[in-house]
Image 1: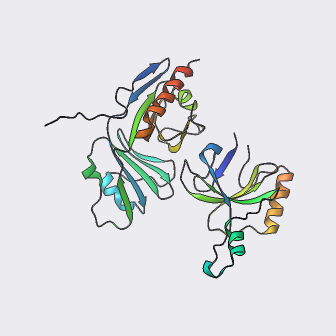
Image 2: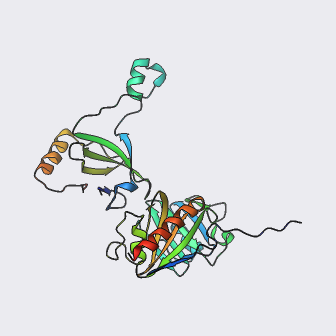
Image 3: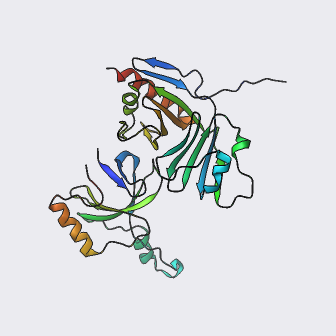
Amino acid sequence: MAKTARALPNEGQDFAATGVTITPCQPATRVSLRGKVANYARIAGFKLPGEINETTGDKGCHALMLGPDEWLVINTKKTDADLMPGPNVKAYTATDISHRNTGWTVSGPLAETALAVGCPRDLRLEAFPVGACARTIFGKAEVVLLRTSKTSFRVECWRSFAPYTFGLLKEGARDAAL
Amino acid sequence: MLLIHCPYCKSDLPELEFANAGEAHLVRPADMSDMSDADFADYFFVRDNPKGVNLERWRHAHGCGRFFNAVRDTVSDKFLKVYPAGEPRPSDAEVKALLEAQAEGRKDGGSGA
């Protein structure tokens, strides 16, 4: 029988420049939720945020509120089966998008500057504090940003945009120190 | 860059995240099969395009994803007001007040860059 290895869209996409390091994120379970999600807290293990652009959770388990009735759950510890609700849930919909997204961690004292190359949002700490998230645009690709610490961001995009997004992230990292 | 206030995200965000979605407050006719071709063409294709105040639909496409309505002055390219979809059309008096506020340089509702 033929054997195949799992090929990740962000495989080998490491890059380091003065003040910025880009590392590919490990595969994670991701669930997109729409509707009235109060009951989902039981499955997530923590309360979901109530304001747009806020997050709850920590260290690899995050719930991001992206819109008035839309949440994104990212979890590196639990499997798809753990995080999907059963078939009888009527208050909200949950879609497993684990394989649709891929991501990188952009960190370092110049991470903000590197992202500003393609992102028009105000990413200064005052406007985008630790724990803030946003769906926004990076160059021509839609991305979800999550600030995990003062100097580090998680950048997620759809997997087909990965070569473009990583290319622009590299450009940003290279230019940040100039 | 022009900053647009999103009534759902409640903050001023860059124009690049938004998409214009045409004229607001168009009412879909209840019975299209009874309409004459001319009336249907008028509803379907013909849009007002005044110089000055326009009532428009916008979508926070690369953000919360929601549609909302805006009062925008095409002369100054300032957003005079933004409001969630479903709210009633601002009255002529309200639009006039918004324009006067703009002329006086006051910021009201939405923001311009």
